[in-house]
Amino acid sequence: MRLAVATLAAAACFAASVLALAWSWADLTVSAARAPEQAKRFAQITPNRWREAFHRLHQARALDPLNANYTAELGRYHAWLAWRSDRATEASRSYRQRSRAAYAEAIARRPTWGYAWANYTEATLLAGVTGPGANLALERAMVLAPWEAKTQIKSLLVGLSLWNGLSEAQRNEVTATLRRALFVGDDVELIIRMAVQSGQVTLLEGMLTQARHRVLLGRVIAQSGR
Image: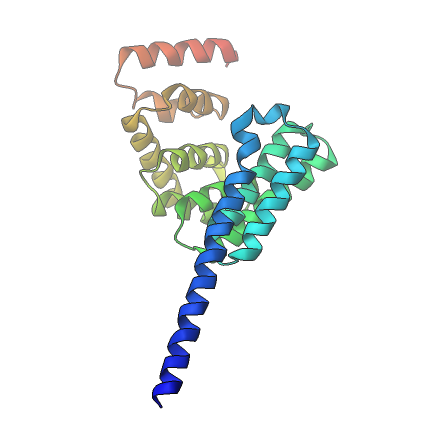
């Protein structure tokens, strides 16, 4: 009996060691995959460097298949490649669809990850998919990560673009997200440009309390010709 218990304990320790090694190797692999991004602007990365980065990310996902971060990284890389491509080409559409699929996979692994929901809803919008499913994804992003700056920006990009198709409750959530993003104040100019571009100036202008932001709004409106 003692021998059996000792054997089981040894096997458990071995399994834990193997898993720890796999996870460590997966993290190292993803760090290497990010190297092209860190080395220079991604627009200048050669096709071979991109292939290497994707290969390493797929390796990491195989080593630690339940880790949502690795599939989210794949979604991010596909989104970058879509931006690099001509937006009207089949390649760009394919990259956007792959990005959306990768973020959906990340959400399946971590359903409460607001940032992944925000990226998924952005990829959904850019892939040309609209409707209740896209609106629900937007809602989850805003509810699950209300104060995360990157999530706020992506949620506002989608929410302002889909405004006419949102329910009253979803519009209220977008409005609340807009207030929080302006309160944080990290991306005020970008927020103003998104509001002007989407035709939601009226929603925004009453929230701008600083004179310089109102001046910026006037300048952006003049530049847009709206």
